[in-house]
Amino acid sequence: MRYNSNLLNRIFTQFIPLVKKIVYRVLYFLAISLVFSIQSFAQTGGKTTYKFLNLTNSARVAALGGNFLTIHDNDMSLALANPSLITPQMHNNLSLNFVDYFAGTTYGFASYGLNVPKAGSFAASMQYYSYGKSDNTNEYGDVLGQFTAGEYAFNLGWGRTLDTVFSIGANFKAIYSSLETYNSFGLAVDVAGSYIPSETFCASLLFRNIGRQITTYTPEGTEPLPFEIQAGISKKLAHVPFRYSILLQHLEKWDLTYADPNAAVDPFTGEVPTQSGLDAFAGKAMRHIVIGGEFIPAKFLSIRFGYNYLRRQEMKVVSRPGTVGFSWGIGLKVSKFNFSYSRAAYHLAGSPNFITIGTNLGDWGKK
Image (cartoon, rainbow, N blue to C red; front, side):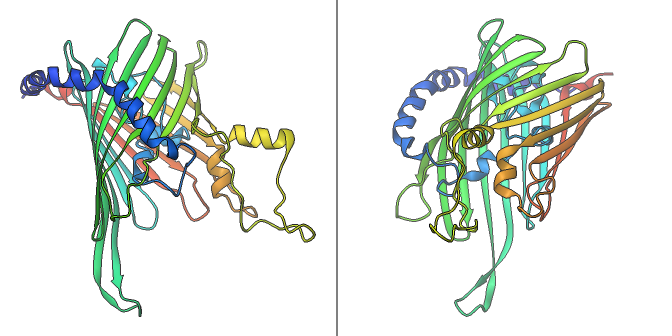
């Protein structure tokens, strides 16, 4: 039976005026949100809520070392992190992503693309983070039972080409978090733009997680969202089957270093030794850079690798740094499916597995 999306097209058509109104006011919402969220710009971890929003959302992204990409090749799994990559060619595309994370926790994403003439292209995604079950104990350590915890977000992405070289996109996120008896709800938007002068080059600028909590876990007040400014480029070489990617993360804050309380202390001054001059500048600059590459020996095969300097500096054990900060993966196209698998070394304790499966539902109706 041929897959038919006419019903979905009619449903979306009914909401075109509302969608346009929301999208064209995104920049206004951005300005207002920046005013209310400016206190969070110098915070990259530990002081924000809904951190699961910035988790790597596909095996391809994980293999190339980051949590977003600027590759313009109609890959549905890239649309959630960079809505300016949403294209009409993603119509009827389905992407399923699963991550076997640490300590029994898991998370995943499901995304579906739909193109609506004159309104733009859309990507609806549902993401979850499951913390599994934990023991509920009293102050004496007696187990009273178990509880579960999880966080969820529904994302509606929109993308549109402005002319032959520029495209824009936005995500609207409805967020729900349930941690034992504590619950919270929030709203956020992403805004992105891409410059695509050719099929082999793409540059993007993103503003992620602009928003706020609507209801809080406790009456003590709202917590900031993990706002981040990102940028990047990707380039496919003309005469070699290779594409490189250079990503810039946390552009909202220059200094991402921190004082390690376990570092050796100078016995005379009582201070922790720090770098200065060129070494300090280079260390701060490299923490913003993620590099990755794809070797494409055939249309059905991709071999990927990446390096994240910030992850290595934050997560490595000095005596045994190992491959922390490095990542690798493989992509295969088999019949009507796209498979991607990758591993990223976060710590000596283990490396999570990333699995992505994609297909175009419209292909299943073709003979």
